[in-house]
Length: 344
Image (cartoon, rainbow, N blue to C red; front, side, top):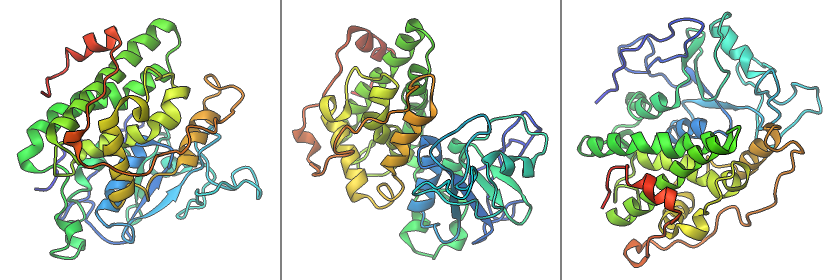
């Protein structure tokens, strides 16, 4: 079933972009017409790039990759912005326009734009404008929007991460997952005082406790059992950054995945090592250096820790029934967990 949006594509300078690629629409699916701007460091851009890869759209939708740092007042930049020696491994030039900064791409779509210059951005080369810069929207409709240009009968064309029989569960779980886990790490990390930090970090671990139980109850290897869904994309983009960045940089240190959550740990390792698309879209150098070198109020010396080592451990145990679920049993975390929908 095609994704339907009732939102205006772009309501004005204060608004983002909400377009949808779909047959018989303003933005029809065509190979080579669209271009995706991402940063490998960003969990929200990771969502879009993961769907692009899982759907086999790499040749149909090329990418430009901004540098992991510095951000600065001008926002994210491309290699060469500060001169010919300004390089960064894994980033690319702006393949469409040769821009120095991402904001230049935004201003091509709306010269009066007043919002954030964030990734991801999906650009339409035919109309010369942004299609969409909202990661949750891209995550949803990219699953079906390009199906007609994919080979009939191919697993990529038939892949959906929002199957009809699981939609009610996905909708219920994604509410607390996006609020308390995906956004929660940022609420904790960018807190300006102790009270705000504690208010932010407690729900993070309540959500992690919940996710640990959820995967175990469903028997893995995915969040809802045998089918890969949007929930795996949402959780992975945060979990893969958790031990290497959020624990130390955002002070989400009530526990680690590798030390406190054995079920999530095996789920995460399985996606990274065994499911095509996850490892290919994960760049630990960009992740670690972005957080530690672009948030000067949090880490003013911009020193990037060497650990944890390795970034992700090898070896996967898919016998989830044999694993005893872990828990961070901080009293405030357990109280917070009680308000979440039961998964048992």
